[in-house]
Amino acid sequence: MHVYLHETIDPVRAPGAHQRYLDELGRIVRTEGNAEGSAGGRCIANWVPIFLTGQWPQIIGFWQMPGGWDGFAEHFDTHPELFHRPLDRWYGERSGGFDRVLIGTDWTPTLDDIVADGTRAPVVLHETIRVAPGGAPDYLERLGAFREQLGDTHDFRILGGYEVAFRNQSEVIVVWSFPDVRTLTRTQSAPERFPELAHWHARSARLELEHTGVVVRPTDWSPLR
Image (cartoon, rainbow, N blue to C red):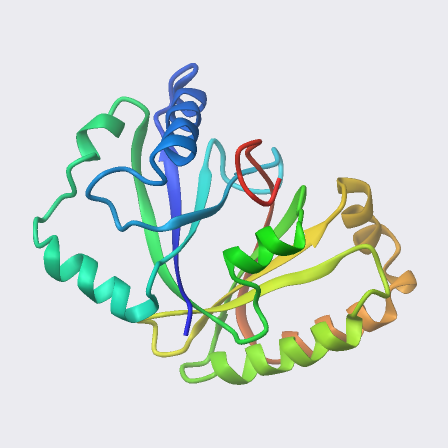
C-alpha cells in the first residue's frame, strides 16, 4: 500500500514570499531530497493554482512516503519532537498550511512509475471530494473503472485517485492530467464532445456530498512538469 503526503501551504502575503519559498524548496528537492527532520517524502509535484480557479496565493505539495505505513510509523516514532527542525526556516515565506495523508489506489502510478514512464501533467485539475462515511473505497473503485474505460480516447486522463486517511473513508482526492488549459476548458465549454465524461459526472454526483476543483500547474522542478 502506497502512502502519500499532501500539504496545502499558505505563503505569506508579501511581495516575493511565494517565489522565495518555491525557490528554496526546489533547491532542497534537487540537492537534499527533503528538508532534514521532515517526513522524508519523495516529491511528486508542487503545484500552484491558476488564478481565478481557487484560493491564492497557495501552494499544494505532493509527496510519496518511503516505506508506506511502516515508513510513516518509523519516521514519527523516531522523531517525537512536536515541531520538526526546518520549521523556523519557512516562517519568512509561509503563514501556515493544512496536511493530509493519502492512500493510493492500486491503479494509481507511484513516483517510480511516473519517472519510468516519463509521465507529464503540465495542467492538473485537482479535486477534493467528500462522500458519505465509508463511501471512499466504492467511489474510487468506480473511478478506476471509468479511468480504464476512458483509456486513451482523449488527450486528458485520470492520473491518480486517493483516499484521505483518518477521515472514516469520507474524503477523496482525484488528480486529472491535461496537456494544456485549452483541452481542459473544452470539457467545460463543449461537454457534448465528451459524453463518457458527462456520464461519469452524472453518476459520481449521486455519491458526492461536496466537490471542490482547482486548476494547478507544477513547478519547473517537479517530476510531473
